[in-house]
Length: 207
Image (tube, rainbow, N blue to C red; front, side, top):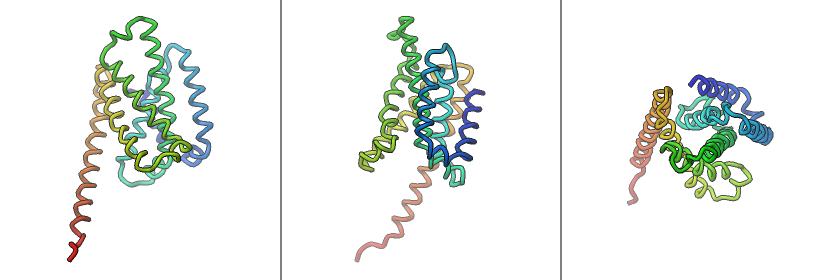
């Protein structure tokens, strides 16, 4: 929990103060994330291969969309794709590490349910990550891209279920985090629905 919270605070801090360099030099950051992930994969236990760092990135990416309008939301939304890609690189490393571990110790087909939910979340994450690269995004129609990225909500649900089913001493923390997101997202949808209803009510019927 402490590692995840520190990671979130650092990402928020760097994102707020260094959003312009992050956007400008994102390719170098992706490369650095890949190198760090490769090194982490060869080690026994790190904050990357255990999933803590990837989770920190995704919590920031997840919550930034439901924040009220503010300067921090404006800056983080401008680098949301970059943060998601970096988080995905770390999450893939976490997933691969545990898949290899399960194969080495012969329990891949007998693992707990949360293990398979975690794999499913990574599988869903892959097309979202690939289409977040601007060179790929430019080749996809806007409506198609938006429809595809609706899968991000399913990804968040699977990640939340994966973490909660582990049932360790961080269960309450994960429950609060994902519960808060559900409430904030629900409130956002209610507000949007009210706004749309008001706009429809202002439209005068044709005579």
